[in-house]
Image 1 (tube, rainbow, N blue to C red):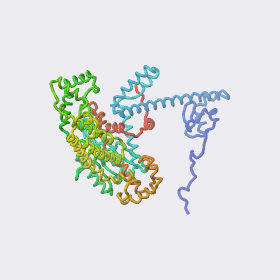
Image 2 (cartoon, rainbow, N blue to C red):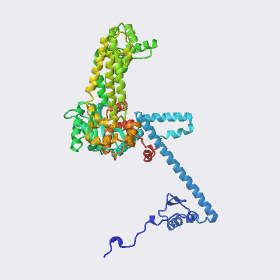
Image 3 (tube, rainbow, N blue to C red):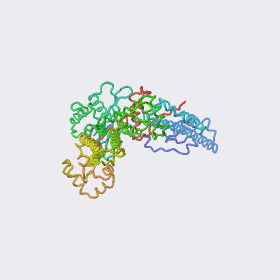
Image 4 (cartoon, rainbow, N blue to C red):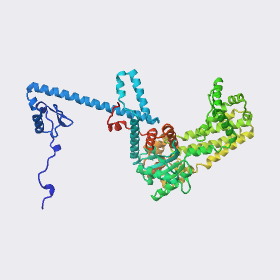
Length: 606
């Protein structure tokens, strides 16, 4: 049989296979040392490519023999030692310079990270540098030169923030590749240049129940903001993170027509796309915080609100009234120094504004008299009682709204808060009918409240309770799904979906698992103690439910930060820079500054 081409000719040797090592005698004979696995000449600092005595000897004889052959014996050893010391000193200087340069880069990243977290302008890096130099000049003058070398120019801070934004996005992409299920939260708002910005947050959970909740994209819409445009933004984001519609668990929106339109809304369009790839289980929700606020608006007490808003506007809208009013309160040594403006969009201001005006009503009445005006409603006891009831009930609604806010909240916890508040409303209705004002402290201070008036407040509370019951249908529809993971050991097995019933029965018979559930938190239980091999269907259901958004709180929070970043003073900031700024400002991902700085060459500031 003829030999193959691999068998023809002698086998070539590789340098790495010859196990050549540096010989100590080469230092005295040829003035060479080993540095970074290669022989280097101490005289000219040139490397020899192959660690072989022939190559080293030839280098020495051709370049240095004429000058250094005169050194013999001890003199030659002393000369070699002297050259070694000199070489070591040079390397230390180079290492120190490199280390110092890296520190300057890391410091600029650290400053950029702080400015990004605080939503500050890129140009404020220069102000920080001036501050550092001024402090150094006072505290440690000998270090001022080091601070002067820091590069914190506007261009540098811009690049640093963009690097960190890309770094966070890359980390999020890595996590997204491990998601078993993920959900999206969307909202849309306009920035200072009237550009519509669609905020898309992603919440995903991996096989170990590790939850990630981050800004996926800020998508600018330059023309229309119809459902098709929103769909393009969502599809672009999904493709950007290499996600699939198969494992999209749900979408939460603000309930706008373009989002939830019955036939052509964004949610309906995404549902169609998901059905095309076999995803029939995707859920959609109207933000639970928005729905709670809509319930609060159902209180029919415009006769109070109009008067109070008119009072606040009279005081705050004109400087000729506002300044004297502040001085008037100061002269009276009042607990408060001013009233609070009310904004319909910022609904939490409603309760604060009402409470402030109610507590300052005597001072306000005196101020009006000084202006030759009067507030007739303040003399009407029934109107003042209505005012007191409105103060108390809006305070309760505010407290609920605040508890519904926050990052990483589980959807079943939020629905439990709503359910608990409905039960409170039912209790308060009964108490009000018997003139029990225990949970209405402001109202309880009002004298001579008649049974008819108390019944009116009970009726208003009942209307509010009915409003809560009629809303949240999207959450009520899946109440059993929530209870399956929130209370698996006490839920009615027959009420659960068929594919979960058998496993739920087995779980309820496991006393050790039940004991662990009672000892630890919900997420910790599923993450550390749940047996996914024994209960695979329940395991997938828990992952699915934990991945869901219940509100668009993160979107609202992001838009507040966007108003600071893209303000009247920074309207020219690009969409890319804006997204990176917001990503840095809102992220919980830890930025690896060492990794970022090691990839950069230091440019010392002049």
